[in-house]
Length: 507
Image 1: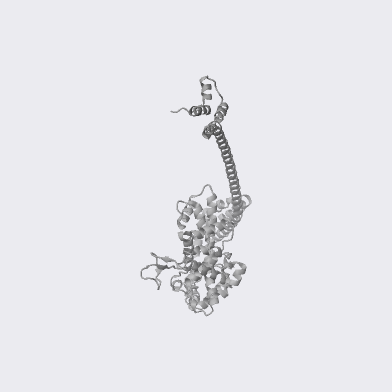
Image 2: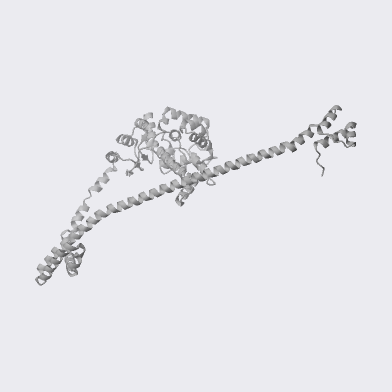
């Protein structure tokens, strides 16, 4: 290996190369010149000293040791910061665990005290009932015993002894009554009771019950609603103040639907002010909706039918989102909670158990966008796909049940996806926007609005839906126009009236 030369040796070697006699003479005389002296002699003879000589020396003897010290200091600081963070994390975890244990212990203690209190309160009526039954049975046994002894004179002495025994027992201990009253009397009384019961049954004859059953008044009242005026469902809705009404396939006419809205006082102006909508769920559109001459009335009827369905689905998604946030913060989850997470990962088509991606996808579709797209794709509820297949969002399918478009090209085989009820169409539409790769920009922009604590507005997100239709940007312009002209942004903060009851109106 080549020996590593010092800076002085390199200067001497340079002097020999340029044949500097003064330096050679000093070397021959064995006089050791310093590096500075060698530099002066070389400069005197107009010899340029290369920069590499000095830089290597500085790098090896000064720069490298200093850089090593710096890196060691940085590593030491990082290690100290890591240790500090670990301690902080341990302290936070300990604090969280202790708080949770204390809260759980207090909760368990409160539940335990509550159970004790409830059990104590439950004992009081039971105790009263026992005392009441005890005295009642005692008196009935006494009088029945007297009655039997009157019929059988030979046992009169036993009756007197029994009465005196009962009196003594009442004054001393209540629990001795059964012992002194005797088993023979109880047996006799039971026999007599069994004999008397058939007499009661004979008196209360079954034909009376049959007469009550034969009265078909209720059935006649049920058969009356065959008239398609639907007056009886409206009256029931008014009297009971129904919180949730599910309307099945009644083949209702538009006139009937409008009358129903009047009866339940369903008005869009009031919805815009109160930001509340009643949960009235239609399973299909009226077949004669297109017969309305007023375009404004037709649009309002369409919005009244679709709005509760969209809001209900959004509230379901928000409930799932809140549950997911709580479970993702928990260190330990139960088996049912894990099963629920796995189910949602499958529903939203998220791979590798990525909960962050699931949280991005599990979010609402602005009500204004949903109403605008439903109006555009279904012709405000009058298209063939909406009336025959409850398809209000024009989703395509190549494998499922669907309706073939009349203007479909011969080289294409797609269909419009068909649904049993309108709510299923809304659910499939929202699942499509929350899972399909074509709407990744829509979901990302919505997530950015969430992170900045901004309102999720339909007009902010319509530009990301250019892949929904073949017309692209023209489609998004139409959506914006529908939203603005019909003031659909007013319905974005609308929520459902708190529903407690469910009543299905049958045909």
